[in-house]
Image (cartoon, rainbow, N blue to C red; front, side, top):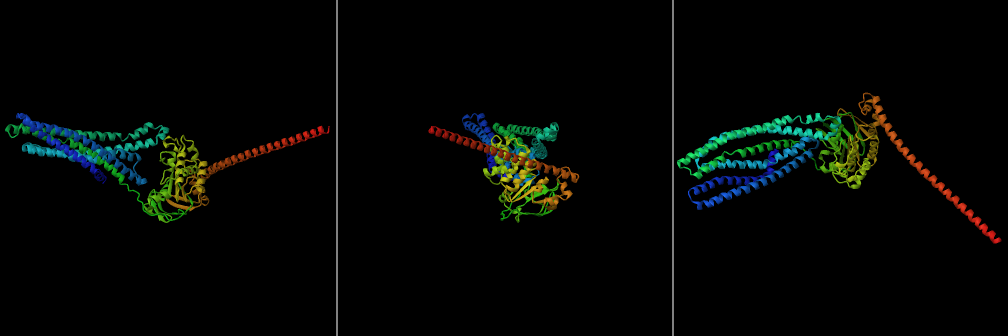
Length: 623
């Protein structure tokens, strides 16, 4: 249980808090006796004898102040360290669980912030609660030592005090659990809304979404008011019971004073001990903190109940990245048997809900199958070490998270640091280098300061995968936001410039499937066919897979034809640009040739002028 683990982790510092609090309680218990003794001596006229006792009273008071300050310092430090440990512990587990964690992101954030802070106080609160018991128990013992009759009054009222505490713990525990649940729901909805703020603005649903986010607020308010009502009711009960007990102790002490069994100082001490023995207010506060901390730890424990993905220690033998699925069953997949040859480019196609993403997830071990085995070059992927698996199997997704701080850091983010040159080459292959260099600081631009479109963000995700490509590269709808021309360039780079051996591509476009060596056609979680695209294209039902909202084969063919026409237009434009460049080069050559002819003519004219000059000189000589 996570609560016990938290208490064990915080135990060393909690013991220190317990010692300080017990010392503070002992100081408080000693003070009435010392004060009573000093009062008796003063009333007896023995002022010289009362001096040391008064000094001791002052010393105990000063010691209580110092101990209280130390207790506050140590408690705050211990709570902060335990909270930090809880957050790191739960966050690491959540990241290790990966897609298995089914809680909404906002819910996880709420638990890692508010609930972790509440659970982090449990060790010190438990120590303080134990020390809080010392005060009433010690007060009762001291009261019995001072006078048994006054102690019997407190003992008679103890069952009522215990009953009051039990009712408070039971009622506050239920309301606290419901309060934290409503709080987590609001946090989850708020995080979702922040992520979709553009959609909300475009749809004009601000008021409706605000109402949706705040829908749990009445329940939160109800449980919050209930918690305060329970606290107030317990306080009222204590306010009615405790003064009666304290007055009863004072009355009995007065009777004992009248009988001569108690001195005035003894009566003062008895009254003070009666107050301490019935002072459960601090204990109620500590118990309230324990209840809230226990509920918060329980909510954090739900995250830790999600099993982590365990890794083996095996290495991969030399190979080309042959991927094999044997009898794989998972939500969305049903007894899939599949062999993908090493070094091939394989497209996975199918209608929405056919199991494409599930296949990509089990292939790269983002999820483990409920049954069956996934092998890479003959080794079960579940037996590979974390380092080997994440180095050799790389993913790109439809909506990549831009991690790494800067644009260059986003591309370099992965199991290892690929280096600046590899980052740049990967960006070129993903058609991202041009727009990255136009950013204010190029590759050093912070992601938060880079206004990226969906297609640009997707290209950065592709670049990250290309920079780390190993034995198996899996693209799960990773080109869905690219235009046809860019997608064509990326596909060509994927075939020729990316060093991955085996490439598994979840495809939605017919040209993407056409460029693959093989196509895995999924239907309702089963492999319907594995064959080249050209062979499958003869089937009307296969062609219909690629038509958006298609109802017949004609719509499918038309959609594919439009894509093909677009690609042809792009190719023609490229060819035209090449022809223009060649024509320009020809014009330049012609111009250079004309300039050469002109120079030859000028040279000939010069020769002719020299000949005429020579003839003139000869004529002069003859004359």
